[in-house]
Length: 366
Image 1 (cartoon, helix red, strand yellow):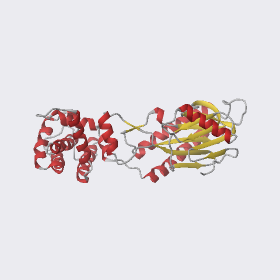
Image 2 (image 1 turned 120 degrees about the vertical axis):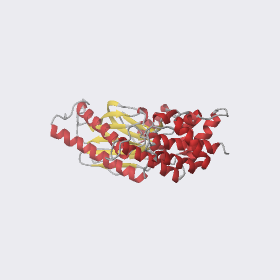
Image 3 (image 1 turned 180 degrees about the horizontal axis):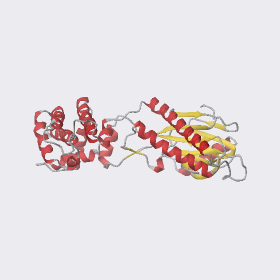
Image 4 (image 1 turned 60 degrees about the vertical axis):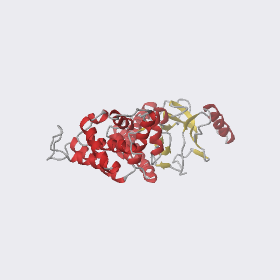
């Protein structure tokens, strides 16, 4: 682990725990498991979570570890899983520890379909957690400005990299801690204010730069990319929407949880087909260009009758999944537009009508 460029900071590390110790202490502000908000502490701990342990047991183990290493003082605790994807960058002004945590929850779709998504997903969602240590003695007001900059930068990084909207970072799962060194032994709120605009701007830019660089390292090492389910979700469609649309035109059979689950699984199976993926992505990309009027010659705001390439895509998707019979089924879904299909744009209503129609036809041939 790279050294933090603060002369009186000591780092203790084992496979499960990192302890950053400074006798004079840190002024800490942020979101963490223990010692969050605004606090003065002598130790900042990143601890690998074990789900089967209670908080009281974890705290007792940490207190025992501190005692074994003759480390004294209060601590702030970031209690999340981390792996080898832990990145540290230390400049003359700021040190940043960024680590991956597989503690992201999925947005609620439905219990059964959420399970299907997790089983069918080709990657395990994760988020980046950050611990920033400012090498200067700052006031609480100055530290708050730094924390605000870090929050804004974290969001910008996620948007810039296209973190899937299907991934939801809950507040209790998302750790961001900003700390500054304390030189005054008696008052944790005394320090250097950020009153000089030039200094404030430089500090803000330093925070942004170091967070972006560390995040790039993490993204690059993880080969981060989105899947077709992420693009579908970001277009305003969930698995549950697709299943419900399929059920609306289902006749002659009882609509049961088993039937819904069968359709959900078939949708996932179909979304593993590179040709289905390519056709859906073509529709999503074109819809985006139409929606934002990126093509000077094209305006389809009123879904003109002479636009039929959307139906060509829908029929191609249905045919790819279940053959000729699915094309006839597609016409029903295209004309009646059940459920979510009635709210979508000119390309997407037909694209997802083809997906639903093809999958409905497929499950009834088996």
